[in-house]
Length: 314
Image (cartoon, rainbow, N blue to C red; front, side):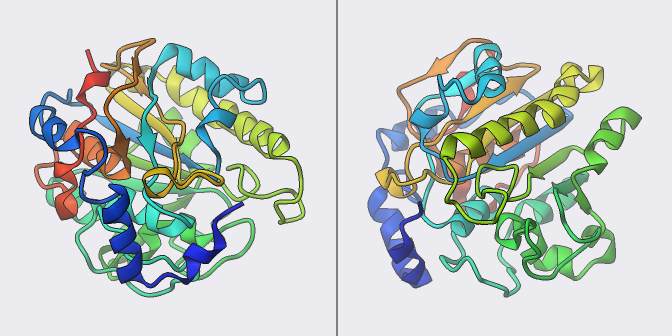
């Protein structure tokens, strides 16, 4: 369960908490040294794909029998053993992954976000993008929750760059479009994939969290196998692709703000079977990695100062 008291924090209080826990400034571990030494050497690829699951402690995923497919991917890819979410609840983590800033601690937030973000920089660099969002009510939907669609898991719908452009709004698509794009060879340069609340380990079939966590994780694992398996088998992705699967936050761990979460990387230049167990990373590191891997020169809101995930590449 989430730490509900954190939802009452103001944005300024959340930001102070993140600084204190190392979730924004790079206070974690020896990140200052790592950010300067690991600031380059990310291999360039044509396709970057980010998949985000929900609310699970690292120890309940890695090595767990309830997620056999995910752990198969761990054995084939590279595992970031010291990767931490930045905050509780969900929404600041999704914003940090895509803007480098927490923006809000309110999961019911419905305002427009005008700060620099991944979409703005991808467009400026001439890169294509899509958010594949399971159960989104319609392409380009900008409204609120319609369970099992949860808007606080869909950060792109808040960006002014998306809301104020019909062409960019059209890049918010149902996750069913992923298979079609992979098959047709039209996968964009940047993809952000969000399962719905029934498939991302967030909720039980009745919309609560009252069922065993193992049941929710099993369903998420099945979703990954059905939806990510074809992507990894695609020849174009194999030739020039990077996949990162992570969790937005832990279930109940407060370490470094949002707790330790399972994060695995797979792709063209990833070191298979590698485990990074020394440097501590967070969602700003992910944002920086996704931009650098596509050759995007500007990384939003100082995320380039986060520990850089170069050790996972050959």
